[in-house]
Amino acid sequence: MESRALALVFSVLCLSLLRATGVTTAGSSDGTERWGYVEVRPKAHLFWWYYKSPHRVSTPTKPWPTVLWLQGGPGASGVGLGNFLEIGPLDGNLKPRNSTWLQKADLIFVDNPVGVGYSYVEDDSLLVTTDLQAAADLTTLLKVLVKELPSLRSSPLFLVAESYGGKYAATLGVSVVRAVRAGELKLTLGGVALGDSWISPEDFASSYGTLLLEVSRLDSDGAEHANKDAQVVRQQIAAGKFRQAQITLSKMLNWIVVNSGHVDVYNFLLDTGMDPVADASAASSSSAPEYSRYLLESKSVGDTIEGAMNGAIKQKLKIIPKDLVWQAQSYAVYYALINDFMKPRIEEGGKARSFACTCEYFYLKLDVICSAVGAEAWVEKLKWDGLKNFLSLHRQPLYCGSVEATKGFARSYKNLHFYWILGAGHFVSAC
Image (cartoon, rainbow, N blue to C red):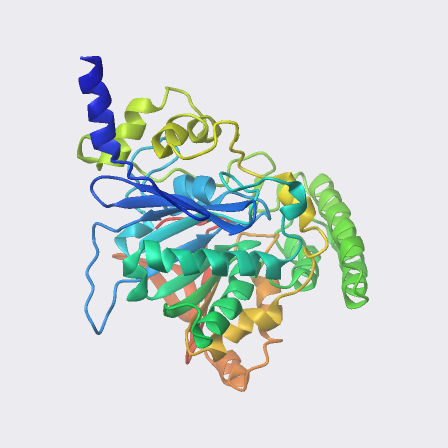
Protein backbone atom coordinates (compact mmCIF):
# COMPACT_ATOMS: atom_id res chain seq x y z
CA MET A 1 0.00 0.00 0.00
CA GLU A 2 2.80 2.39 0.94
CA SER A 3 4.62 1.80 -2.36
CA ARG A 4 1.40 2.36 -4.33
CA ALA A 5 0.77 5.65 -2.51
CA LEU A 6 4.32 6.75 -3.21
CA ALA A 7 3.94 5.86 -6.88
CA LEU A 8 0.69 7.82 -7.03
CA VAL A 9 2.35 10.93 -5.64
CA PHE A 10 5.10 10.74 -8.24
CA SER A 11 2.63 10.12 -11.07
CA VAL A 12 0.60 13.15 -10.00
CA LEU A 13 3.61 15.43 -9.79
CA CYS A 14 5.67 13.87 -12.56
CA LEU A 15 8.69 15.81 -11.46
CA SER A 16 11.12 15.32 -14.29
CA LEU A 17 14.14 17.13 -12.92
CA LEU A 18 16.68 18.44 -15.39
CA ARG A 19 19.98 19.53 -13.91
CA ALA A 20 22.25 21.31 -16.34
CA THR A 21 24.91 23.86 -15.52
CA GLY A 22 23.10 26.38 -13.30
CA VAL A 23 19.62 25.18 -14.34
CA THR A 24 17.13 23.02 -12.39
CA THR A 25 13.62 22.48 -13.72
CA ALA A 26 10.52 20.45 -12.84
CA GLY A 27 6.90 20.30 -13.92
CA SER A 28 3.47 18.70 -13.68
CA SER A 29 2.39 15.66 -15.67
CA ASP A 30 -0.41 17.45 -17.54
CA GLY A 31 1.98 20.10 -18.88
CA THR A 32 0.13 23.00 -17.27
CA GLU A 33 3.11 24.03 -15.15
CA ARG A 34 6.87 24.24 -15.12
CA TRP A 35 9.14 25.78 -12.52
CA GLY A 36 12.79 25.92 -11.72
CA TYR A 37 15.99 27.72 -10.78
CA VAL A 38 18.44 29.54 -13.02
CA GLU A 39 21.87 30.46 -11.70
CA VAL A 40 21.97 33.93 -13.25
CA ARG A 41 25.39 34.61 -11.75
CA PRO A 42 27.70 32.28 -9.82
CA LYS A 43 25.92 31.47 -6.54
CA ALA A 44 22.92 33.69 -7.37
CA HIS A 45 19.72 31.72 -8.11
CA LEU A 46 16.41 33.05 -9.51
CA PHE A 47 13.25 30.96 -9.05
CA TRP A 48 10.50 31.03 -11.72
CA TRP A 49 7.09 29.39 -12.12
CA TYR A 50 5.24 29.06 -15.44
CA TYR A 51 1.53 28.32 -15.96
CA LYS A 52 0.16 27.32 -19.36
CA SER A 53 -3.35 28.64 -19.92
CA PRO A 54 -6.13 26.06 -20.49
CA HIS A 55 -7.76 28.69 -22.73
CA ARG A 56 -4.74 28.94 -25.03
CA VAL A 57 -5.72 29.68 -28.62
CA SER A 58 -3.01 30.89 -30.94
CA THR A 59 -3.09 31.84 -34.62
CA PRO A 60 -0.39 33.28 -36.89
CA THR A 61 -2.17 36.64 -36.89
CA LYS A 62 -3.00 36.63 -33.18
CA PRO A 63 -0.46 34.65 -31.14
CA TRP A 64 -1.38 33.81 -27.55
CA PRO A 65 0.47 36.17 -25.15
CA THR A 66 2.66 35.39 -22.15
CA VAL A 67 2.78 37.68 -19.11
CA LEU A 68 5.90 37.98 -16.97
CA TRP A 69 4.68 39.33 -13.62
CA LEU A 70 7.10 41.51 -11.64
CA GLN A 71 6.25 42.21 -8.00
CA GLY A 72 7.30 45.36 -6.16
CA GLY A 73 8.69 46.01 -2.70
CA PRO A 74 11.49 46.02 -3.49
CA GLY A 75 11.81 42.57 -2.00
CA ALA A 76 8.23 41.26 -2.32
CA SER A 77 7.62 37.75 -3.67
CA GLY A 78 5.89 37.51 -7.04
CA VAL A 79 5.65 33.72 -6.78
CA GLY A 80 3.79 34.05 -3.48
CA LEU A 81 1.93 37.38 -3.49
CA GLY A 82 1.33 38.12 -7.18
CA ASN A 83 0.51 34.48 -7.85
CA PHE A 84 -1.66 33.41 -4.92
CA LEU A 85 -3.03 36.76 -3.69
CA GLU A 86 -3.58 38.57 -6.99
CA ILE A 87 -3.70 37.01 -10.48
CA GLY A 88 -2.63 33.34 -10.44
CA PRO A 89 -4.89 30.28 -10.90
CA LEU A 90 -5.25 29.69 -7.15
CA ASP A 91 -6.12 32.15 -4.36
CA GLY A 92 -4.63 32.48 -0.89
CA ASN A 93 -6.67 29.49 0.29
CA LEU A 94 -5.29 27.44 -2.63
CA LYS A 95 -8.68 27.27 -4.30
CA PRO A 96 -9.30 28.11 -8.00
CA ARG A 97 -9.68 31.83 -8.74
CA ASN A 98 -12.38 32.78 -11.25
CA SER A 99 -10.61 36.01 -12.21
CA THR A 100 -7.18 34.53 -12.91
CA TRP A 101 -5.25 36.17 -15.74
CA LEU A 102 -4.75 32.68 -17.21
CA GLN A 103 -8.03 33.36 -18.98
CA LYS A 104 -6.13 35.78 -21.22
CA ALA A 105 -2.46 34.70 -21.20
CA ASP A 106 0.14 32.21 -20.06
CA LEU A 107 1.77 33.41 -16.83
CA ILE A 108 5.34 33.46 -15.54
CA PHE A 109 6.03 34.48 -11.96
CA VAL A 110 9.55 35.10 -10.72
CA ASP A 111 10.91 35.83 -7.26
CA ASN A 112 12.95 38.85 -8.27
CA PRO A 113 15.62 39.99 -7.51
CA VAL A 114 17.78 37.19 -6.15
CA GLY A 115 17.20 36.88 -2.41
CA VAL A 116 13.40 37.27 -2.68
CA GLY A 117 10.98 34.45 -1.81
CA TYR A 118 12.32 31.13 -3.13
CA SER A 119 15.21 32.84 -4.97
CA TYR A 120 18.44 32.96 -3.04
CA VAL A 121 22.11 33.90 -2.99
CA GLU A 122 24.88 31.92 -1.36
CA ASP A 123 26.48 35.15 -0.15
CA ASP A 124 24.66 38.41 0.66
CA SER A 125 27.30 40.35 -1.25
CA LEU A 126 25.61 38.97 -4.41
CA LEU A 127 22.33 40.84 -3.79
CA VAL A 128 21.65 43.45 -6.47
CA THR A 129 22.11 47.10 -5.54
CA THR A 130 20.60 48.71 -8.66
CA ASP A 131 17.57 48.24 -10.92
CA LEU A 132 19.98 47.77 -13.83
CA GLN A 133 21.62 44.79 -12.11
CA ALA A 134 18.19 43.26 -11.53
CA ALA A 135 17.39 43.77 -15.23
CA ALA A 136 20.62 42.03 -16.24
CA ASP A 137 19.74 39.00 -14.07
CA LEU A 138 16.21 38.84 -15.51
CA THR A 139 17.59 39.02 -19.05
CA THR A 140 19.84 36.06 -18.25
CA LEU A 141 16.77 34.23 -16.92
CA LEU A 142 14.84 34.89 -20.13
CA LYS A 143 17.70 33.54 -22.25
CA VAL A 144 17.25 30.24 -20.41
CA LEU A 145 13.44 30.29 -20.45
CA VAL A 146 13.20 30.57 -24.25
CA LYS A 147 14.91 27.18 -24.30
CA GLU A 148 12.91 25.67 -21.42
CA LEU A 149 9.57 27.02 -22.68
CA PRO A 150 9.39 26.63 -26.47
CA SER A 151 6.09 28.57 -26.60
CA LEU A 152 8.00 31.74 -25.70
CA ARG A 153 9.61 31.76 -29.14
CA SER A 154 6.25 32.48 -30.79
CA SER A 155 4.30 34.02 -27.91
CA PRO A 156 4.70 37.80 -27.45
CA LEU A 157 6.04 38.53 -23.97
CA PHE A 158 4.39 41.27 -21.92
CA LEU A 159 6.23 42.65 -18.90
CA VAL A 160 3.57 43.47 -16.32
CA ALA A 161 4.59 45.11 -13.08
CA GLU A 162 3.14 46.42 -9.85
CA SER A 163 4.55 49.21 -7.65
CA TYR A 164 8.37 49.07 -7.44
CA GLY A 165 8.19 46.28 -9.99
CA GLY A 166 7.55 49.00 -12.56
CA LYS A 167 11.17 50.08 -12.21
CA TYR A 168 12.22 46.48 -12.90
CA ALA A 169 9.92 46.31 -15.94
CA ALA A 170 11.13 49.62 -17.36
CA THR A 171 14.81 48.69 -17.12
CA LEU A 172 14.17 45.09 -18.20
CA GLY A 173 12.29 46.27 -21.29
CA VAL A 174 15.33 48.25 -22.41
CA SER A 175 17.65 45.31 -21.63
CA VAL A 176 15.45 42.81 -23.52
CA VAL A 177 15.30 44.95 -26.65
CA ARG A 178 19.06 45.37 -26.65
CA ALA A 179 19.57 41.61 -26.24
CA VAL A 180 17.08 40.86 -29.05
CA ARG A 181 18.72 43.35 -31.40
CA ALA A 182 22.14 41.87 -30.60
CA GLY A 183 20.88 38.39 -31.51
CA GLU A 184 21.36 37.16 -27.92
CA LEU A 185 17.67 36.59 -27.16
CA LYS A 186 15.05 35.15 -29.49
CA LEU A 187 11.65 36.41 -28.39
CA THR A 188 9.15 39.15 -29.18
CA LEU A 189 8.56 41.88 -26.63
CA GLY A 190 4.83 42.51 -26.94
CA GLY A 191 4.59 45.34 -24.46
CA VAL A 192 5.31 46.81 -21.05
CA ALA A 193 2.47 47.45 -18.59
CA LEU A 194 3.21 49.50 -15.49
CA GLY A 195 0.58 49.13 -12.76
CA ASP A 196 0.69 51.79 -10.01
CA SER A 197 4.43 51.85 -10.60
CA TRP A 198 7.07 53.76 -8.63
CA ILE A 199 8.55 55.47 -11.70
CA SER A 200 9.06 59.03 -10.37
CA PRO A 201 9.29 59.24 -6.57
CA GLU A 202 9.45 63.04 -6.51
CA ASP A 203 6.21 63.40 -8.47
CA PHE A 204 4.42 60.97 -6.20
CA ALA A 205 5.72 62.64 -3.03
CA SER A 206 4.56 66.02 -4.37
CA SER A 207 1.01 64.71 -4.77
CA TYR A 208 0.39 63.45 -1.24
CA GLY A 209 -0.53 66.71 0.48
CA THR A 210 -3.01 67.91 -2.14
CA LEU A 211 -4.58 64.47 -2.64
CA LEU A 212 -5.15 63.81 1.06
CA LEU A 213 -6.51 67.33 1.56
CA GLU A 214 -9.05 66.77 -1.24
CA VAL A 215 -10.31 63.52 0.35
CA SER A 216 -10.31 65.06 3.86
CA ARG A 217 -7.62 62.82 5.34
CA LEU A 218 -5.44 65.90 5.98
CA ASP A 219 -6.47 69.47 6.80
CA SER A 220 -4.86 72.50 5.15
CA ASP A 221 -2.08 72.69 7.74
CA GLY A 222 -1.35 68.99 7.26
CA ALA A 223 -1.26 69.38 3.48
CA GLU A 224 1.13 72.32 3.79
CA HIS A 225 3.41 70.23 6.04
CA ALA A 226 3.41 67.39 3.49
CA ASN A 227 4.10 69.78 0.62
CA LYS A 228 7.13 71.22 2.44
CA ASP A 229 8.50 67.71 2.99
CA ALA A 230 7.91 66.94 -0.70
CA GLN A 231 9.93 70.00 -1.68
CA VAL A 232 12.87 68.69 0.38
CA VAL A 233 12.54 65.33 -1.38
CA ARG A 234 12.68 67.10 -4.76
CA GLN A 235 15.79 69.05 -3.77
CA GLN A 236 17.58 65.95 -2.50
CA ILE A 237 16.79 63.96 -5.66
CA ALA A 238 17.96 66.86 -7.85
CA ALA A 239 21.23 66.90 -5.89
CA GLY A 240 21.68 63.13 -6.33
CA LYS A 241 21.21 62.54 -2.58
CA PHE A 242 18.97 59.53 -3.09
CA ARG A 243 19.55 57.90 0.30
CA GLN A 244 18.72 61.13 2.13
CA ALA A 245 15.61 61.51 -0.07
CA GLN A 246 14.46 58.04 0.96
CA ILE A 247 14.88 58.93 4.64
CA THR A 248 12.91 62.17 4.16
CA LEU A 249 10.15 60.31 2.32
CA SER A 250 9.93 57.68 5.06
CA LYS A 251 9.58 60.33 7.77
CA MET A 252 7.04 62.18 5.62
CA LEU A 253 4.86 59.09 5.20
CA ASN A 254 5.06 58.27 8.91
CA TRP A 255 3.92 61.81 9.73
CA ILE A 256 1.07 61.58 7.24
CA VAL A 257 -0.17 58.29 8.69
CA VAL A 258 -0.17 59.62 12.27
CA ASN A 259 -1.86 62.91 11.33
CA SER A 260 -4.48 61.54 8.95
CA GLY A 261 -6.30 59.18 11.30
CA HIS A 262 -3.89 56.42 10.25
CA VAL A 263 -4.74 56.44 6.56
CA ASP A 264 -3.71 53.35 4.59
CA VAL A 265 -1.28 54.77 2.02
CA TYR A 266 -2.33 51.99 -0.38
CA ASN A 267 -6.02 52.96 -0.23
CA PHE A 268 -7.16 56.25 1.32
CA LEU A 269 -10.62 54.82 2.07
CA LEU A 270 -9.02 52.40 4.53
CA ASP A 271 -7.06 52.74 7.76
CA THR A 272 -3.65 51.20 8.35
CA GLY A 273 -3.91 47.48 9.12
CA MET A 274 -6.86 46.72 6.86
CA ASP A 275 -6.01 44.07 4.26
CA PRO A 276 -6.14 45.67 0.78
CA VAL A 277 -5.83 42.40 -1.13
CA ALA A 278 -9.17 40.64 -1.34
CA ASP A 279 -9.40 36.95 -2.16
CA ALA A 280 -11.15 36.33 -5.46
CA SER A 281 -14.16 34.03 -5.49
CA ALA A 282 -13.22 30.38 -5.64
CA ALA A 283 -14.74 27.53 -7.63
CA SER A 284 -15.37 24.02 -6.36
CA SER A 285 -12.20 22.00 -5.89
CA SER A 286 -13.81 18.98 -7.56
CA SER A 287 -13.12 20.45 -11.01
CA ALA A 288 -9.68 21.78 -10.13
CA PRO A 289 -6.61 20.79 -12.16
CA GLU A 290 -4.19 18.38 -10.58
CA TYR A 291 -1.95 21.02 -8.98
CA SER A 292 -4.99 22.47 -7.18
CA ARG A 293 -6.12 19.12 -5.83
CA TYR A 294 -2.63 18.29 -4.60
CA LEU A 295 -2.28 21.57 -2.73
CA LEU A 296 -5.79 21.49 -1.26
CA GLU A 297 -5.14 18.04 0.15
CA SER A 298 -1.74 19.05 1.53
CA LYS A 299 -2.58 22.45 3.02
CA SER A 300 -3.59 22.37 6.66
CA VAL A 301 -6.71 24.21 7.79
CA GLY A 302 -5.82 27.68 9.01
CA ASP A 303 -2.51 27.92 7.16
CA THR A 304 -1.50 31.43 6.19
CA ILE A 305 0.05 32.07 2.78
CA GLU A 306 3.43 32.01 4.52
CA GLY A 307 2.58 28.67 6.07
CA ALA A 308 1.49 27.30 2.71
CA MET A 309 4.60 28.58 0.91
CA ASN A 310 6.79 26.86 3.49
CA GLY A 311 4.51 23.81 3.67
CA ALA A 312 2.28 22.38 0.96
CA ILE A 313 3.66 24.46 -1.92
CA LYS A 314 7.28 23.87 -1.01
CA GLN A 315 6.57 20.14 -0.72
CA LYS A 316 4.95 20.13 -4.13
CA LEU A 317 7.79 21.95 -5.88
CA LYS A 318 10.40 19.52 -4.44
CA ILE A 319 13.41 21.58 -5.64
CA ILE A 320 13.39 24.32 -2.99
CA PRO A 321 16.44 24.04 -0.66
CA LYS A 322 15.37 22.46 2.63
CA ASP A 323 16.88 25.21 4.76
CA LEU A 324 15.25 28.04 2.76
CA VAL A 325 12.40 29.79 4.56
CA TRP A 326 10.04 31.68 2.24
CA GLN A 327 9.08 35.19 3.34
CA ALA A 328 6.62 37.56 1.69
CA GLN A 329 9.11 40.43 1.94
CA SER A 330 12.91 40.32 1.98
CA TYR A 331 14.25 43.31 3.86
CA ALA A 332 17.80 42.29 2.96
CA VAL A 333 16.88 42.90 -0.70
CA TYR A 334 15.04 46.13 0.16
CA TYR A 335 18.04 47.62 1.94
CA ALA A 336 20.47 46.39 -0.72
CA LEU A 337 18.50 48.54 -3.21
CA ILE A 338 18.01 51.48 -0.85
CA ASN A 339 20.34 53.82 -2.77
CA ASP A 340 18.41 53.18 -6.00
CA PHE A 341 14.97 53.42 -4.41
CA MET A 342 14.42 57.12 -5.14
CA LYS A 343 16.02 57.21 -8.58
CA PRO A 344 13.43 58.02 -11.27
CA ARG A 345 12.98 55.71 -14.28
CA ILE A 346 10.95 58.06 -16.50
CA GLU A 347 13.38 57.71 -19.41
CA GLU A 348 13.30 53.92 -19.30
CA GLY A 349 9.54 53.94 -18.68
CA GLY A 350 9.02 55.81 -21.93
CA LYS A 351 11.51 53.93 -24.07
CA ALA A 352 9.24 50.91 -24.55
CA ARG A 353 6.97 53.12 -26.67
CA SER A 354 9.87 53.91 -29.01
CA PHE A 355 10.56 50.16 -29.40
CA ALA A 356 7.27 49.78 -31.33
CA CYS A 357 5.69 47.66 -28.61
CA THR A 358 2.59 48.46 -26.58
CA CYS A 359 3.18 50.65 -23.53
CA GLU A 360 0.42 50.76 -20.92
CA TYR A 361 0.25 52.63 -17.61
CA PHE A 362 -2.43 51.68 -15.05
CA TYR A 363 -3.05 53.88 -12.01
CA LEU A 364 -5.65 53.20 -9.34
CA LYS A 365 -7.53 56.22 -8.04
CA LEU A 366 -7.69 55.24 -4.34
CA ASP A 367 -3.92 54.78 -4.07
CA VAL A 368 -1.77 57.33 -2.26
CA ILE A 369 1.77 55.96 -2.45
CA CYS A 370 1.74 55.77 -6.28
CA SER A 371 -1.09 58.20 -6.91
CA ALA A 372 -2.72 58.76 -10.29
CA VAL A 373 -2.03 62.49 -9.88
CA GLY A 374 1.69 61.81 -9.48
CA ALA A 375 1.63 59.48 -12.48
CA GLU A 376 0.03 62.14 -14.67
CA ALA A 377 2.84 64.49 -13.64
CA TRP A 378 5.65 62.13 -14.68
CA VAL A 379 3.93 61.15 -17.94
CA GLU A 380 4.00 64.84 -18.91
CA LYS A 381 7.82 64.62 -18.69
CA LEU A 382 8.11 61.89 -21.33
CA LYS A 383 10.38 62.78 -24.26
CA TRP A 384 8.03 61.92 -27.11
CA ASP A 385 6.94 63.93 -30.12
CA GLY A 386 3.42 62.53 -29.73
CA LEU A 387 3.02 63.67 -26.11
CA LYS A 388 1.12 66.87 -26.95
CA ASN A 389 -1.40 64.93 -29.06
CA PHE A 390 -1.74 62.30 -26.33
CA LEU A 391 -2.46 64.89 -23.62
CA SER A 392 -4.98 66.74 -25.80
CA LEU A 393 -7.26 63.71 -26.21
CA HIS A 394 -10.44 63.25 -24.18
CA ARG A 395 -10.55 60.25 -21.88
CA GLN A 396 -12.92 57.41 -22.73
CA PRO A 397 -15.00 55.66 -20.03
CA LEU A 398 -14.37 52.00 -19.23
CA TYR A 399 -17.01 49.42 -18.30
CA CYS A 400 -16.69 45.94 -16.82
CA GLY A 401 -18.67 43.18 -18.51
CA SER A 402 -22.37 43.92 -18.92
CA VAL A 403 -22.45 46.39 -16.01
CA GLU A 404 -23.08 49.92 -17.26
CA ALA A 405 -21.42 51.66 -14.29
CA THR A 406 -18.18 53.44 -15.17
CA LYS A 407 -15.16 51.55 -13.80
CA GLY A 408 -12.43 53.80 -15.11
CA PHE A 409 -11.15 55.93 -17.96
CA ALA A 410 -8.62 55.46 -20.74
CA ARG A 411 -6.60 57.67 -23.05
CA SER A 412 -4.70 56.21 -26.00
CA TYR A 413 -2.52 57.60 -28.76
CA LYS A 414 -0.58 55.31 -31.07
CA ASN A 415 1.03 52.66 -28.83
CA LEU A 416 0.77 54.55 -25.51
CA HIS A 417 -2.25 53.85 -23.29
CA PHE A 418 -3.04 55.34 -19.87
CA TYR A 419 -5.79 53.91 -17.64
CA TRP A 420 -7.40 55.45 -14.58
CA ILE A 421 -9.06 52.66 -12.55
CA LEU A 422 -11.80 53.81 -10.17
CA GLY A 423 -12.67 52.21 -6.85
CA ALA A 424 -9.33 50.43 -6.43
CA GLY A 425 -6.26 50.94 -4.26
CA HIS A 426 -2.66 49.98 -4.84
CA PHE A 427 -3.19 46.28 -5.49
CA VAL A 428 -4.67 44.47 -8.48
CA SER A 429 -8.44 44.19 -8.24
CA ALA A 430 -10.96 42.09 -10.13
CA CYS A 431 -14.19 43.22 -11.79
